[in-house]
Image (cartoon, rainbow, N blue to C red; front, side, top):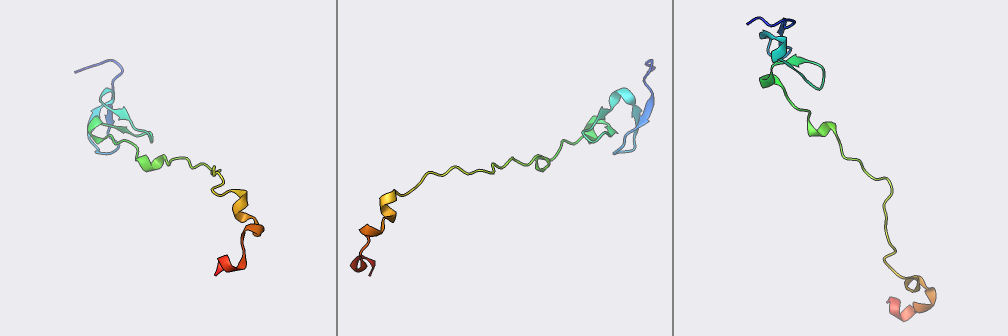
Length: 75
């Protein structure tokens, strides 16, 4: 059917001859038919990793106090 401004084009993935209005533009710029369209891989968008880790002190200062450790307790 004739439509003003709608020209023939070739699908970049399948090679089929289709009307331009029947194609979609993919994320990488190809003109393809909807059946040949594929979404981006989730691995293209890696999660962001925080560079600073937040840790609380797990032991009190008295644990490291040398006066609390005696020789008999070590053996």
